[in-house]
Length: 113
Length: 116
Image (cartoon, rainbow over all chains, first blue to last red; front, top):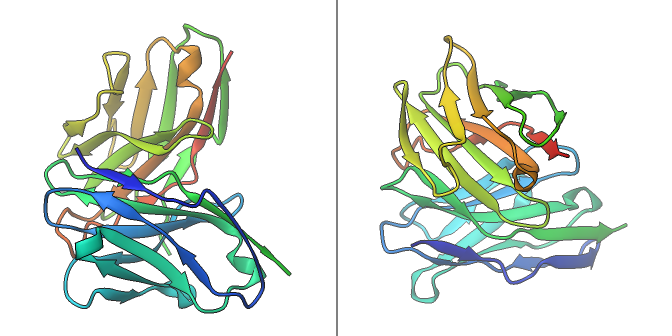
């Protein structure tokens, strides 16, 4: 069965610091990976997705993620965070056979102004 | 920009009561989903729905749960006899398709269900 692990449950950064959130997955099929963000009081929104091609994927709001097949990882990065990036971030893998997303446990990011 | 909407935002019910959670998916989407998130736990898949049929369901989605698309716009999740452990945030989602180019799932804001 597929699974997703996010190693950091809570991250606190100051504005302008660089961000890297870890995500490791376990899935035997063709990999299709997502990062979603949930801002306080809002719904889950897609930040970026990977399904093939360039393993470095660029998303909205300056976020990017790198798919490293050998490490089963899909870490999310941002060079310089802003206070408005305070949110919960979820990594997910898509199960092609079952048409479902399997989510990691989420990482709560707090950016101090 | 089209959005998935859910009502109510918060539902409080007594154990053993039936609840119906409502969702309006994005209008040109064909695939619909329910997920739930118990407080402090992961977002978990419940069920996917296509062409008026369940296409996949998880172990959580037992006989107490059912889904329906009663008309051309609504997609509902019914819990027949709620239990305390059903207390969670329930998210509805929809997608255009299931191929890698159109399988992005758009989520609603969630319904917080509290079972007393």
